[in-house]
Image 1 (spheres, rainbow, N blue to C red):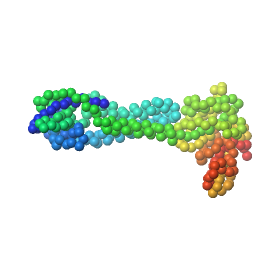
Image 2: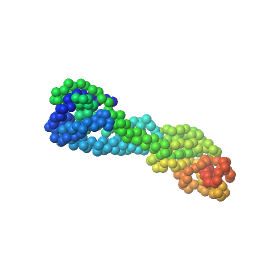
Image 3: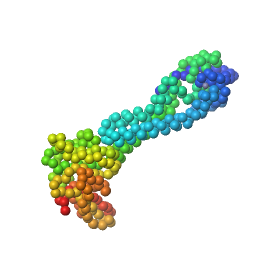
Image 4: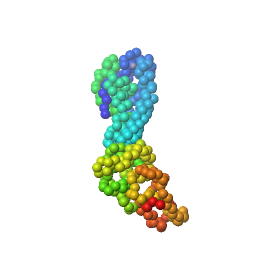
Amino acid sequence: MRQLWFRAAIERSRLLPPICPACLDVGVRPLDVPSRQPGSDPGVTAYYCDDCADRLEQRATRLMARRASQGVLGIGAATSAALVLGGARVPLQVLLTLLAATFPLVIAAWPGAVQAQPALLHLASDAVRHHWLARRKDFLQRLGADVAIEHAPVPRRRIIWDLLPALAALAWLSTLHWFGRAELRVLHSGDQDAVVLIDHRRRQTIAPTRTEHAYAAHAVSTLAGRRTLGIVGEEGTLLVDVTATLWPGRDYVLGTLPAGRCLFLERQEYGEEGSARDLVALPGAGPLWELPVNVDQWFAPLSPRPSLPTSGGIRTAVRLLPCR
Ligand SMILES: [Zn+2]
């Protein structure tokens, strides 16, 4: 990105006049002229009017406020988009996040918006002259100098800092999608295939389950939040329709169980933990069961011995067994 500036060389002996370089009003407040070359301080002051001097002095505060608002808007938009849309329309979620996080930048760059940046920069000095870069051509003309147009690059550091809140908001969106997921295992006990709906959107076709086996239920991952979960049969009959809050990182079973079968939670201790095994029925009548722990194995018995060498631990499995 480049900005339009005006360049002129003026004798060193000539003092800058008390004219505001930003608005050509009467200059009353001397401010140091920053140098384009890092580390070199020309030791010259320019006279700004009160308004422009105030704006320049508040620049750091305004910049901080703008970047903070970019971050807040971006993270707010990412969170709302993820909660409303869940795992669907991810490109739209990214777009909304980027738009919100860059909105304050658009306002700041809007034509007519007052730029709070120095209107005069020192470029270099030689034996007899100072070289100046000014935002206004007429300011340099008032000094009786020959003015040349210069397209100077915007300092790169500023662009990176401007984009940082948008990157932070995108990182937050990815974190929500990565860590904010709940895992569902969907079972259905009918005779024909059915379709799983999440927030009324089709997710997967599932085959009916009659007995327990390792592939008895279909894994469906979705973003946590308030979700409407449904299972629709072949003829369009709604077999399951439930709205519930899913928590990130939790495991759930959704669906209808085959006749005479119930869900159980199996625990097996290994090594130093002991060797106890227990099997307890999962409370609740469905169609949504929230599991109290993260499950290691689905719909298959746990081995009484660990499959890998281990000092000890507890493993859990969800089982689909005849009701007691
Ligand atoms: Zn001014």
